[in-house]
Image (cartoon, rainbow, N blue to C red; front, side):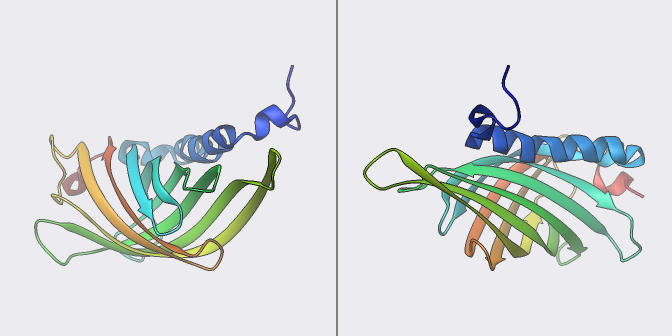
Length: 185
C-alpha cells in the first residue's frame, strides 16, 4: 500500500487534486452558514509564462464588515513548452465594486503558489520548484445576476502575480450553485 511519502503520491495530478480539491471541501465544512452561497465551477486560463491551463474555482462570502467582500480559491494545471507541469493555486479576497448595472465587477488581492516541474538534462531527471507570490486582480461577472435564475455565473478575471512565478493570467469560467446576488445577506 502506498504511503504519503512514496513517489506515487507526489505526481503533479495528485498535488493538483489535493491542493485544488481539498480546500473547497474543507471550506464548505468549516463554514456551514455560507454553504448556500458557496459557488464552484470550471475555468480555463492563459498565462504569460504558464500558457493554457484548466482548473476549478470556488467562491464564498467573507463576513468581515468591509463591504461586499468575497473569497475565491482556485487551482489550475498547465503544461507549457519545456515544462512537465505547472500547477497554480490561488487564494484571493475580492471587493465587489459597482461600476455598471449589467456587470458585477471585482478588484482584489491574494496569494499564489506555483508548483513547477521540468525535465532537465539528457536523462529523465525531473526538477521541481515551488514559488509563492502576491496576486493583484480585477474581473467581471456577466450578467451581474448570472443566468438560469442566478445559479450559473460566467466570469472573466485578469490577475498579475508579483514575486514568485511572476506572470499575467487571463481566466474565464463558470461558477454554479449558491444564492443569486440579489438573495444574499
